[in-house]
Amino acid sequence: MKKIKLATIALALTASVLVLGGCGSSAPAATDKTSGADLKLSQGVGQTSVFRTKVDKTTKQESYSTNYVTASAIFDQNDKIVRVQFDTLEIAQASKKEGATLFPGWPSAEIKKDDVVTAVANWKTKRERGDAAYGMNWTEQVDSYQELFKGKTVAEVEQWFAKNTSDLNGTPLVSDSEKPEDQAKFAKLTDEEKTALADVTSGASISLKDDHGDFIGALKEAFENKIEVTMPAK
Image (cartoon, rainbow, N blue to C red; front, top):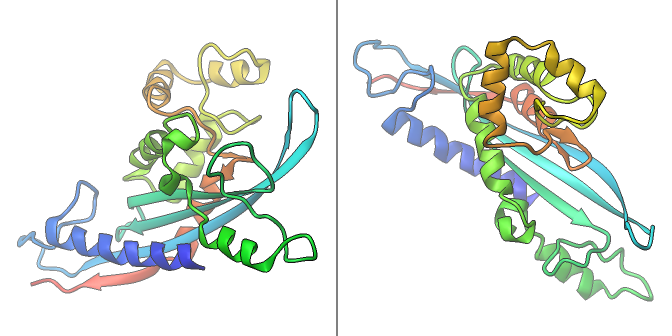
């Protein structure tokens, strides 16, 4: 798939940037003369697909879409995340939004093959479409999660997700939630954890795992698919 190929190329380019310029992660910069050891990084790509049913509030009519999340990640020698980038390809059955990424259906007597070919060729991810298409700062919020995950192992990210997000919809817990289940879970956090979580929700509140996409699963798969890349010390 074209998106996967692009993600793999992006990972290779990112690894080169880290080697040339270093980064703020726990991985040592290749320009560090003190270690004298090879720089070992790993790169991986993971994907998850989620099916979504949407019900129109007025007509009560159902429409369908799929959300395909890709995670492109680089890990250091201790399996901590050096960098991760998420993107989502949302493919809808039908949408009133101009420029929506649609699948018109398989070629048939009613659907021309050329129309399907054109529609698929013009598919764009959420990053490519831009935040204006979704009426929210989707990219900024996802970027905030990416920064949050830096320096953590995938297991630590999963632990953070399990403790700090709603079991109902995968969004970060907030102090003023109207849902009893979320209130009870938030109350179990320490004051320090509540403060740290408030810092997170100040920049991001979208779900990390629901029918809009599974970011946690994509990151986990990226780690499982990782391949070691060793940069010789100079």
